[in-house]
Image (cartoon, rainbow, N blue to C red):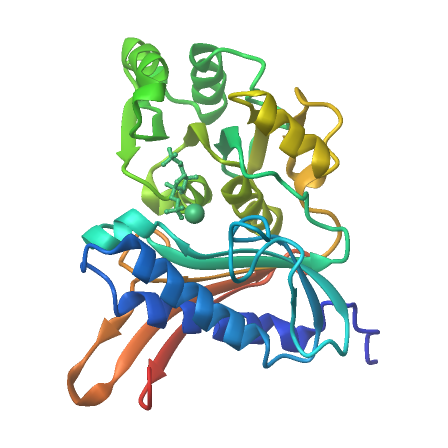
Length: 322
Ligand SMILES: O=P(O)(O)OC[C@H]1O[C@](O)(COP(=O)(O)O)[C@@H](O)[C@@H]1O
Ligand SMILES: [Mn+2]
């Protein structure tokens, strides 16, 4: 029996990989060149071009910024051919601009799509994030508890000592207190220079040995990581952080009424969703773009779908162009 296809037709699953591949390949030409802006611009342009080949009626809900600050893939921009299903898109054509410029680990081209209205229109502010992998009781950890309480609860559930827990944290001065508290507990801290989309997703992969993600990063990146966890399992909590009234006004403009709210996965991503990412540089999730002899280029991508929980790892060999 043929199942009725949802707005996110199966075809779109693999098409999304082409889109992230295009962005990753374009950005990779600028890897290690010390020019963050050029790397980002290359990814943005390639992603936009790839989207515009597709038979769908897409709207960017999380993108490169507001219309007046971003020339392309701004919030509200329509992409695709304008026919077919209406899809909302969250994207970060180059997640890890500094990483790419320095040729560090974990830069990704990343996007998530959902049926219209399915993604939180997160303002471009910081978000306090907390994530753990699958298999734990709901709310085993909470943004309303201290880091020490969360580590202790997680350790008990995992059947290890608190000092055996490994927490991933962005290496930022604003996290000094968090890091000091975790050091007090004796945890292992995986400090990352950038790239918390990969950092959050790392909790879902036992091979990374990372048990928990803590600390603040971009709210848009929070929604992207949440889309991945919606597909593969795990828990995520996020609370928007505002540094000034302007940021609060920005959030209200995007429909956020309760500024202190804790968002869980189902609040960030509703209904069916697809998450896709291609590695730009090597990282915990994916290998980066590699240029090999004879014009061959290889890419590694992952694409996941929430409704089926299917995860596909896609190795690409690109022989012409790029
Ligand atoms: O660098 P800040 O201001 O601490 O922001 C953290 C955010 O920046 C990143 O490290 C990289 O973001 P870019 O994609 O803009 O380079 C994100 O992963 C993270 O959410
Ligand atoms: Mn980013």
